Image 1 (cartoon, one colour):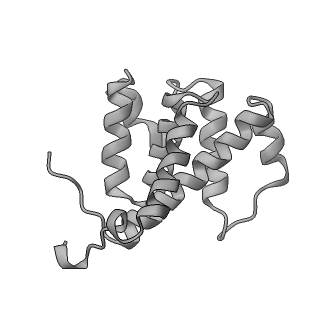
Image 2: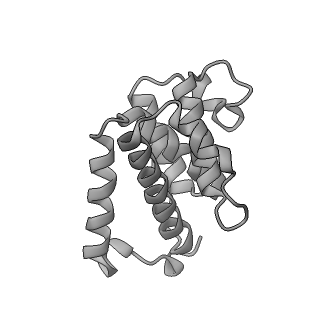
Amino acid sequence: MNAATHIDYTAASPDAFNHLLQLSTGLHKGPLGHTLVELVSLRASQINGCVFCLDMHSTLLRKAGMSQRKLDTVPAWRESPLFDARERAALAWTETLNAIGSAQVPDDALEQAREHFDERELSDLTFAVAAIRAWNVLNVGLRKPLPEA
């Protein structure tokens, strides 16, 4: 990627960047917990093709103790026995919300998510999906490069 095509949104829009960062940081401290927010962020980033976020969230999940085997099966979470019911509900809700624009939210999707999350948790989960989609749009659209190893 040509470095000239990259726009540093952290410098160009520092107030907006800091507000989005504050939202994301706050969600990690909420009732969903760090690992579930990271898992949701990883899945949305896989769908949206954000290499920067894929690298960051998979690294953070490994540091949080998630096995490489489980990380490797995130794209096929429906078939993998490595995810519990709460993780499955969060991943399903993430995929449903991430498809807005090309598909409607099925009538039963919210009720299925409510089986595993209370109103605060479901609200936070929805904010987490909205936040990672915003990060994905910024990173993919403004060409944020993958950091050096």
